[in-house]
Amino acid sequence: MKVTRFLLLAVALVFIAIQFLPDRLPENLPKDEKDIIHSGLLTEEVLGVLKTSCFDCHSNQTEYPWYSRMAPSSWFLADHIKEGREHLNFSGWENLSRREKIGILDDINEEITSGAMPLKSYILIHTKAKLNPAEVALMTKWTEDATAKMFEGSKED
Image (cartoon, rainbow, N blue to C red; front, side, top):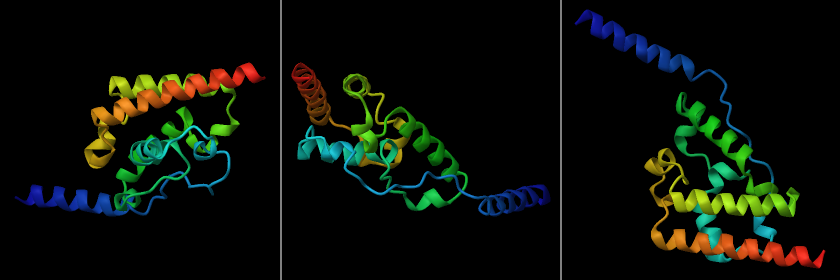
């Protein structure tokens, strides 16, 4: 009994102590004209899906939940967001070349249709982010249409 109490007290003290470590959450940057919203590629429905299921990890406009300020969950979130932004950041869409955009659209299509995105760990907590079959179909059509639009645009250059 004394050992159990001691262990619980030790765990509680460690939990309290780690709250004083600085969080490493990426900062949100001001919105600008270089994000995908201003690209002319999105419908309202697609934008809604992106905001609900993608932007928290793949844009500079993350909506941090209450538990994002508590260690160790803040560490887990910081790593996921940094990694997500490194792979794809919709906030810098217009900084990408046409070839990069086409590759990203293809990757988005593959990740969504395979069920790899959104991450299972994300949709466990953010249940609204889970894509239903209609949303998967919408996003698949969008990536294909946007890719076709990109190829059409390359003929003009």
